Length: 191
Image (tube, rainbow, N blue to C red; front, side, top):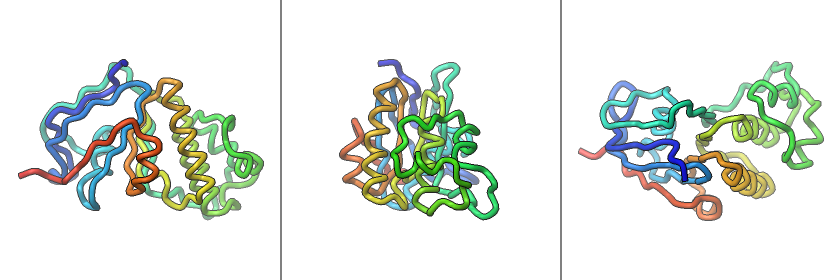
């Protein structure tokens, strides 16, 4: 298995360190869960891997040319977005192929006319199916109903089978147990 990224004694944060030191590696075709209590720095780790948060110490190694797609917990604003679902997917290079019927049939509608759950899943799909080697997902099951979570579980496994690496943060331990090959536990910042 080709290694996509490695973190060695990684300490990361924003104005100050909030997580670390952390050691893990993630390979092509692997789905890894990042678990820990609120405030442990899970979202900060994703931000550091994507180059948005500061790495204070340690080593972050990425395969040369690694492309990353990041989904954050911040929802896209819905009011006044004059894009259709199909146009939103085109912005990230995601395809509609594989979307569940309950959403695929609505891609011609404006994003701001979709339900909250439909917008959540469409935004998630725009990242999950984007052409990237590594997909970083922050609480992807938030606001999803059972059908959305089930479809997402299958889509994550399919994405990994097609060679992407996936690192996901979630408080949904049942979901993590279903889709992840292994789990990295965070306790926060070690002193």
